[in-house]
Image (cartoon, rainbow, N blue to C red):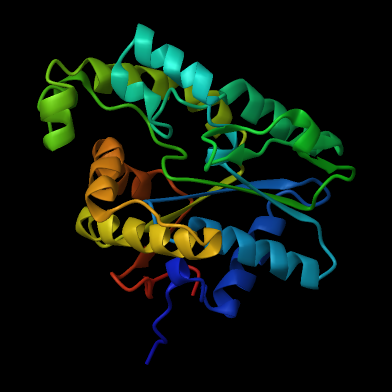
Length: 275
């Protein structure tokens, strides 16, 4: 019987699975750092797997750097400007169009050269930390792990954008202006996607589990911060910002990713093609 594993609770993925992921990634570009992208719905275990890969690499004497698309959010001031000039929903960080894509690409390029400063985003302050507080890397890593909920995703068709899919879209984006703008911006991420050598997709069983996974994440964050997290109603509303493209990813990313790892509702691996 397979052990039940809860990455979102901090237990993590099986060590043998992590080692296989590490071996597969390192074999891609021998002598040069591989850029491994990990995609998946909120709460699927992306950051947990990235941290495990860093630890597994360190155990072997390797340098593994973990980055998140969250590290490259636009600053609060930049998003407030978008909210005024484009759509009020763009004040919320996370959807396509709310990241500094040029900074993300430049950071990956600098890591490949062997010297880089890694941006950091303070989620409590809701803005990027000043460069003086970024981590400095002085050697070329053996592996770069880049995780994010929509990595590799391609835009939807115009027809797919017409009908609202949840309460947020119906009440706050009735004319589809926000979702059309975000969808158009998604095409701008293609150069960043092209920097990834491999794409691993953690496939949730359905979107129905995502709000609960995100709520569990919030509880864990609240414990670490020793302060209350978002209430469940706020979490449910927040998740609706990502529902459309998360569902789109569930349909399309399995056909794009190099490796698809299927999870059940408890984060147990139910299928891994490399096993």
